[in-house]
Length: 144
Figure 1 (cartoon, rainbow, N blue to C red):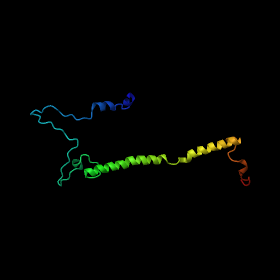
Figure 2: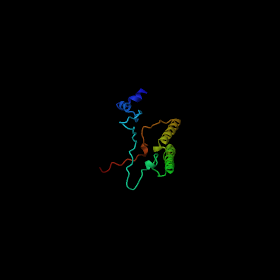
Figure 3: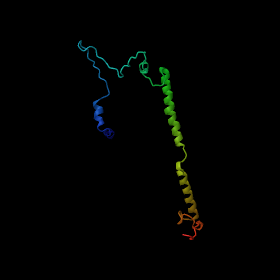
């Protein structure tokens, strides 16, 4: 556990010194200070002349799919289901069942089969000459 904490290095003291919280005074207001004001996390949308309202004001859980809150949430759920769940399952299955790249597994099986066959016939596993010397045709030493 301590090794995981040490990976944060110099960022850890900064994280601990600034906890992610808002502090609101709980004391009773005096007449000179007035009431305690809590600021919004998002600044209020600027009022334009034609009365356009931000989708975040109408629907605080806006996901960007539709202006209707119910349709927006359903579209988000369907999009994430197909985009993540199905893509991971079908994509993972596709990658798992891809054929042998470079035929490495086939080459190994073929080499093992040839080794067993040569051992049965009493031949060396690797011969001195790669090609059969009798089948090599050399050019004549004519004009040079």
